[in-house]
Image (cartoon, rainbow, N blue to C red):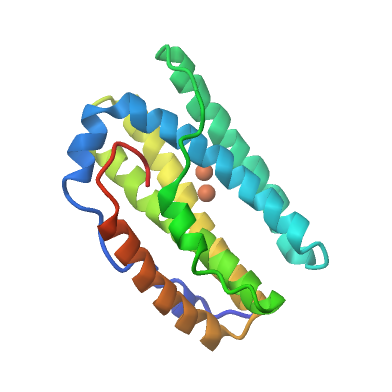
Length: 200
Ligand SMILES: [Fe+2]
Ligand SMILES: [Fe+2]
C-alpha cells in the first residue's frame, strides 16, 4: 500500500444517522436482522464481483477473496441467529441506498470506475459500521450487543481496506478528493431516504 494512513483513515461519513433510526430498529429488530443478513450476502457478492471485474489486480483479488469469505461468514452467523428466532430469509427487497450510491460511479474509464466502485463499498461499509455500532449500544441482550460490537468493528476495518485499495490503484490526492464528493453525496442519500428498520 502506498497510502499514508493519516490522510486515509479519516472518518468517511459526512452525517450521522437520524437519532430516530435506533429506536425504530430496536422496536422492529427482527426486520433489521433479516435485512442485515441480506446485506452480508450482498457484501460477499460485491467482493466476488470486484475480483471478477479486475482479475489483473493481484492485491485486489487477494483482498476481495478474503473479504468474500469473511462476509459470507458474517452472513452465516446472522442467518443462524435468524433461524434461532424462527425467521426466514425471504426475498431480497432490494437496496435503494446502495442503488443510489452506485449511480455515482463514473463508467467512462476503467481506473476511475475502479476508484468509484471501491469508494462506494467504503461508504457502505462505513455506514454499516455506524449502524451496527448503534445497535450494539442499544440492544439490551448482552450476547446480541456483543455480537453487533464485533461485527461493527469488522465493517470499520472493511471501510479502511476499501479506501486503502483505492489509494493503491489511484493517486492518493484523487482518492481523498473523490471521497469528499462521494461522502457528501452519501450523506444526502441517507437524509433523503425514509427511516426504515433496516441497516441502510
Ligand atoms: Fe460484514
Ligand atoms: Fe463488510
